[in-house]
Image 1: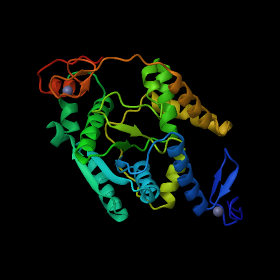
Image 2: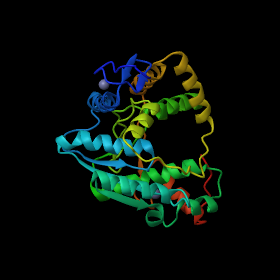
Image 3: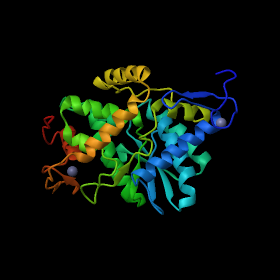
Image 4: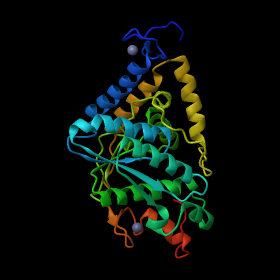
Length: 312
Ligand SMILES: [Zn+2]
Ligand SMILES: [Zn+2]
């Protein structure tokens, strides 16, 4: 990008946004990301004046970038931010991430709370995986337990909305996976304006949903946001990595195609009809559930040896 000038201000460009044709300098790139997030929030009514927002911060570049961006956007709107980190109890992995989180979050002066699986459930993820008797994957178990942990954290901190750092790439990959699985319920859940089915569940929003993953990586790099070096030992992406590869290849040939997929996903999600299922109350934890025992209690009771949990 030597000698190439920023389309907006004429300074030295450092980034070429292929799908729009813009060449951007450091400052114009960062403010364009910020403006895009603001537009997403307004377009889908993600946040409102005075919200108490819990930001799920894992220590990865996406969640730290989200926290920094929301901190700057929300300051003038009397909204309060709380950084929430879930410690799943993954030996050798979570320690580094929590260290990164603590240092960064202190620097930008946001209150930070860590909730651990061990404290909430009596078991860390390592124990659950060792003791599990069904074939349910580590990522599915972790996802179920993490979702609940965030709801508990939100209740405890009295936040009314939880922001997660899913980016455009994450969302369209999930959309494609759901298409391949024929899982229309999960496509319905991609609607950014969907309301939770119960007062026990805190509304989730994804303010980075219209930002390419590559642009968040660039934003993190330009803002000295630390990068985690260790990857999760349980990571098994399966079909997601194949889909990522295919979509990236399409985007290379047809810049902007990722946006089109996202817009299609949102339109379909908003047009889908989902049967209203009557929610029961889990007999052990009182959280809403589609059967007698909720999925969290099924996992915990299985590893305690009290029930045999067959996956789906
Ligand atoms: Zn510029
Ligand atoms: Zn339960």
